[in-house]
Image (tube, rainbow, N blue to C red):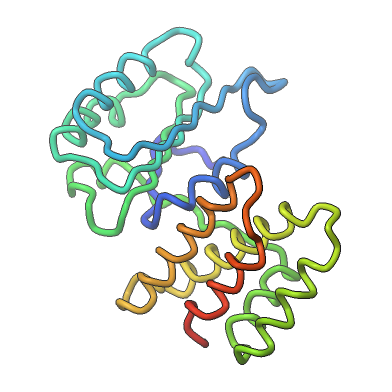
Length: 212
């Protein structure tokens, strides 16, 4: 983590899983820091007040709060103003919200969180996938799923890398790109099921994602 106390990430809530992994370890670390991470369907005034109360507790004096939501109300943002201006020493806040929803007054108290850095190998894999023909994409998926050992984790890592790269390419700037990120988010949700159809989900992305 860098030294500022409040950050924003503009993008889909599906980024939550990737940033949560980056901000691990969960729970108590050797330095005493705590990660409190939660997704909300809607972050309203009640949720904001609850966060303010939680962040004031003494056992959260060295904590990082990661919050993702596709909808944050004006009232909730106004309630967070003082918290993000004068937090407990050692507290850090990271908000994942859609593009353009933050009030200027709240945004001015925050910095943009550094974008996820995927490994060079993962970058090359997703770049090649996105530039491939439908048949090449299908062949890649078959190869990815061939070995059943750890297959779900490989699929999840690939989807995470795809999403991070698409955000880096500013997919949200055009309708086709926004739809692509929504498709990735949908696949990510289904990957959390106990026995998801990995082939069907990845083949959906193969067809749905634009060639770049």
